[in-house]
Length: 378
Image (cartoon, rainbow, N blue to C red; front, side, top):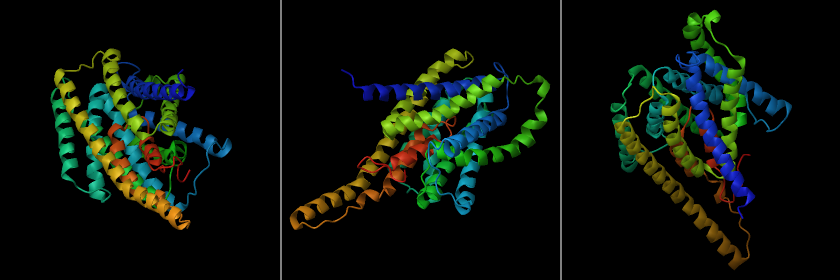
């Protein structure tokens, strides 16, 4: 008989895949000039941030579903504000790309995420330049170039928007580690949105006022409140589903589910949006890039296990000493998760989805769990 826990696990994974794919297709439909005809990506992103900020305020302050962290003005000014700035930028550029290029091609370009994160991590000093990882990055880049060459409706502006959004998100990931992790501050998706969404809304207001507001004609805008409510609710629900899936299965499982979701999404996008055409070069290039991403994740996971071996050896040694000498020695080795965090940062970036704003930070939080299964700073 199939256990209830196993059924729930697969149910959570199915919900994650459906929500992740659905939100991306939903955003494309809303922003596309051919369908819902609301070509204002900054406005749509601000709606998401406002909705997330309001909902998380009630969850944290009113219903007390989760407890707020100890947030000082110094931490907010030096950590939350810069992270929110790059977070807002990644959402802005990523959503703007929907106006110019297809969903399928966007998913193929997202394979560059580990490349961008690796470059930013090396520049910021949180990772070291290694030839095996560098060759994997070259493989991923070659795959993306081949896929881009095979794109029939290639658009330079849309590609630049998407790539810029990817590098902005990569820098946000690195800043999350450098600024928050070193201060011992761990945020789950709810508390992350609680602190970051309002600040991101303010950052987005500036480009909205300068770029979109002058072009908006209220009389011609099809502003359907139910559509925008469902769109924002879907994006928020996606973050919650990520929280549930990682809590039940772990970060590795959701990476595998993310790869499956990408292939499903590419196939669905060609059906829902007939103008999106996939060529053989697209598929070959994306397969090459994805193989590089998988191999890169494998190497990073090996690094994580290698960093954990000394801690495990110390634990075994302490156990033997305790048995032979009958002296209790507390085991502090489980608190050392520096290698796990660094490895998790780069490898998790492989499947970042800008429509689920806090997936990366949520994954980082769960990657830092201890070997005994308990979560630190929770």
